[in-house]
Length: 314
Image (cartoon, rainbow, N blue to C red; front, side, top):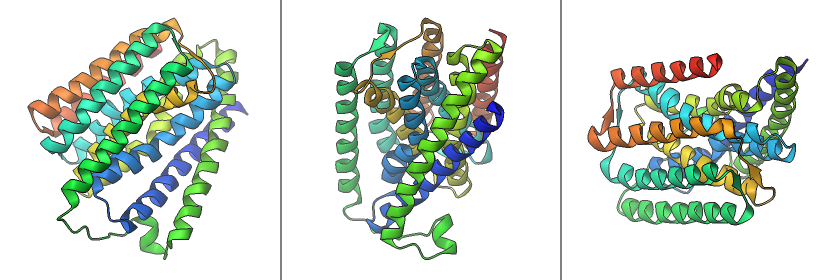
């Protein structure tokens, strides 16, 4: 029964995340903001909602290992698996100006998360600082994007749902709110089933958080980036991952810590270093090459599965 609950919970997380992206993008198109800003703020935030819902419930149920593993594992999966798979389908071009701005914030957010996790606990003070850092990033990204788009005209383009149906602005709002409800229900089912399975099989909650839960909550990013890559929307693909990882690093655990202190299991610290190394690798490639070729994407995917195998062996 726990396996069925886990599967249904992951499906609800994926479905809720996709609906949230659809509703957010439809609203963003009506306000005529750039694909880059959609990828960074709306899609990045929307696809991070499964991680937030899962982490909040996990900490509330004293399963901090799931919350920490979820965030760390998702950030690793977003770079190696999501961008890697998208680059295999179509090489990803990286815009130097936008990447430079967001890469700096990704580096800062990763350092903040690294320090927070190595301290062993995230209290409300540090959580508030992480949320304020994210708020500044969102404001800065919005201002710079609006300045860049001032003299440009963005043609509204339909997305999946709006091609089949006429979706009004109020209906987009309802769609977005409904997706949040699905996310909460899915998170509740995932956390409960993971705790039961971890206890039954004698596997640590942290390992399951790093693998099963992290992969499940990263599926919205995977789907979004693959679709964006196929449609040659590199800005959305890269912005999706950069934005999602920044949100994960600063908002997921920071917002959770505002309500409950997050205790960091000692076993997760090596994985935190893997996350930091993976992030630095992406930044080096972005600044050094300006593109992620197919062979690099293939290497990313291979490294990710080697990491999963390593976790399985330990």
